[in-house]
Image (cartoon, rainbow, N blue to C red; front, side, top):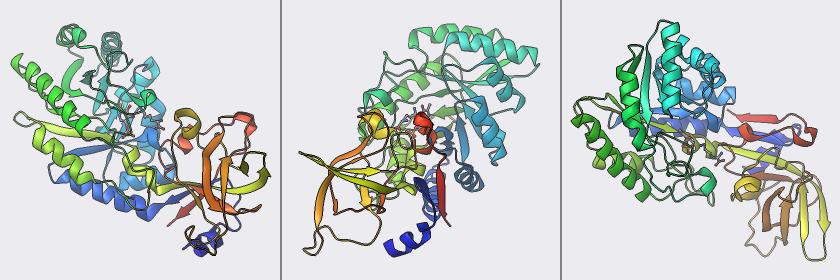
Length: 388
Ligand SMILES: Cc1ncc(COP(=O)(O)O)c(C=O)c1O
Ligand SMILES: N[C@@H](CCCC[NH3+])C(=O)O
């Protein structure tokens, strides 16, 4: 396998994003059939990876799209997503973005504030159209994940605080250009403890009942995304257990007659199909440490620097067994070339003794990797390899 990868990449400059398209297709098949079992609809969260090849694969396999900007809506449509299967979230939607969404007749705005409802109402009226609204409720559920990617607590900026729901309902009732079609929740990302989703279901049931008691029959309950992956062992669990995930909601959600359940999954769909591949530039032997300096850095994959996130680092020049007596193992801090001390992919990583030109893969980089890359230090554009 490694020999084949090495051959494939021989003439391609690094750093590069390596995308395993067969694994992506298999993942989408698995998530779709697991959701179909209960009639659930999955919208892929485009923010996780908006590479056109990835998007066209996902749209052709029948998922909808969850967007967070007007441009994401336009790109989603260009890559084959149906506008009737697009939802639009975000705390700071601009007038231009709202217009794009309305002109394309998307499925729903996941609205995050009273002020936003007013603005959407005005723009919908000026365009003489009707905006479908799902209220994003902040349920105050702790996602037990990194605090930078927790979104459903009272101190977070996301979603409508529950004391403002009455005002939202009044605004919607008083404007014929607004139509309430559902509730939306999303409590955070990289959630690996399924108990978090259990607690979310309790809150969703309470709020669903609250609206029902007020006489609203809401066709859609959108439970957001957030399902985490196993960054430690990307090959042992290359596809997340989607069956367990959806079964939990099937068991716990108390749906009203005719209600549909929607999800917005990003990371769990694309993370494992991508790796950032780099070549070793230099080995620097310090007094206390050895540094493996790569041609990829935080500009290509920001997650370790931003969240101290773990990504498995592998030697891809050839197949090696680090446990074998025949392999000389060294311990390296694996770093990039950027002028920041946080530009480090992993500390004290055991790898075969490295030399200039060796291939190193940073695994599970398919989600929030390429999309969060930057030109800081005037870095060169990324390179790509698509395994077909
Ligand atoms: C509103 C919303 N929906 C969906 C997602 C996708 O999350 P994930 O990639 O964790 O599945 C996010 C990101 O956290 C989000 O903010
Ligand atoms: N960008 C984050 C997740 C944020 C998800 C979007 N709300 C990550 O790399 O893990």
